Amino acid sequence: MKPDNHPFQARKISDCVYWVGAVDWTLPEFHGYRTERGTTYNAFLVMADKITLVDTVKAPFAKEMMSRIASVISPDKIDFIVSNHAEMDHSGALPEVVGQIRPSQIFASANGVKALNLHFQQDWPLTPVKTGDSINLGNGSLSFVETRMIHWPDSMVSFFDRDGILFSQDAFGMHLATSQLFADQNDRPTMQWQAEKYYANIVMPYSPMVEKTLAVLEQKKLPIQMIAPDHGPMWRTARDIEWILGMYRRFVAQPRTRQVVVAFDTMWQSSQTMAGAIAEGVSRGGGLPRVFRLNNDHRSDIATEIMNSGAVIFGSPTLNSSVYPTLADLMTYIKGLQPKTRTGALFGSYGWNQKGREELQEMAAKLGLELVDEPLFVRYVPTEEDLRHCVELGEKVAGSLPKNE
Image 1 (cartoon, rainbow, N blue to C red):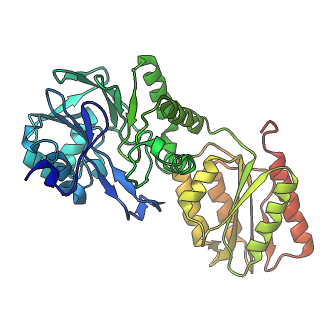
Image 2: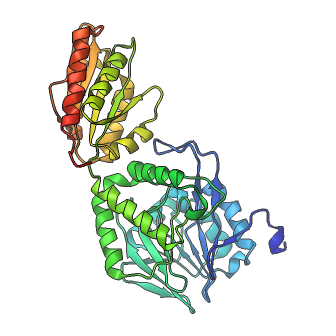
Image 3: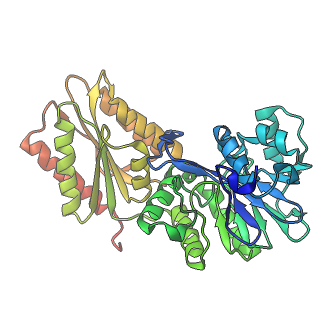
């Protein structure tokens, strides 16, 4: 088949590199994170003297990727494969790809070699590499930096010196399905929200490792002309490269703002009424309330707002002597993401016992939430006096926020 007859075409992104990935337009969810805009699985064909494929795609998209490769070159001409990250959305296509390409070597970190062996149990020519190692591609080279726990133990990034491209695997990426391959071709508000959401829901637990990696990359002074992540658009202008690096520095720091997240659910509107009064108090106190009812708003969106907040307030009715299920879900999810400790408060309602309140307190303690006051729980329906207390609670939370925002 002639190259231009392939249904999926490669797209050139630099002098020597083609994008040969796949667009997953309808992916609804990823690890409990709502991907309302789908995603991409980015893979890259480096057309150096030693032709190299950097990362692959999720297994169902293997044929799409192979079609893109074949639109440039016969796949059996590829010499090397680099696996920056062994998670299945980047390695799932490897069995089919290796079977067709028959590469002389597959490069991965030492932990990556272990993971690929455990995933696929194949006799592949796997070669471990570490920070400081490089491979000679003839008219260019690929050098490696391990980025352990961003966000798997095997993770690493690769730098192609000839074109100045940092293949950054999951770092600096986002879940966004788009035919526009570059950040500067997409609108900035979408890029900002999706970058924030990706970091909050995927990378945030590993912020200390991100901080170290940013320092290593700065120390190495790599002449980066493009950052090419494994999900979402690529960063190719100096402005965009500095923008995303600056965003990651902010994500790592998680500076406290005057935003206050109020996340609650309700059965008979008592907790909802209280949430409105608390938000009123936050506003009166100079805070910026962001109110989410959990039967309407997804945990991954709330997690993103919490990362960008100065305080968080959780509210729950009592059901079967427990916290309402949607609150338990959110707080368990947030606990795993490990946002930096925030001040906050708890509120809710009950009928004949307060075990839900006790459970909510225990969950908040596990989050490291510093409460500004005792939990505010009312019996059945809040009175006017109860609502005044709700306003006061909101004002106290606002008073705990930084004054210089």
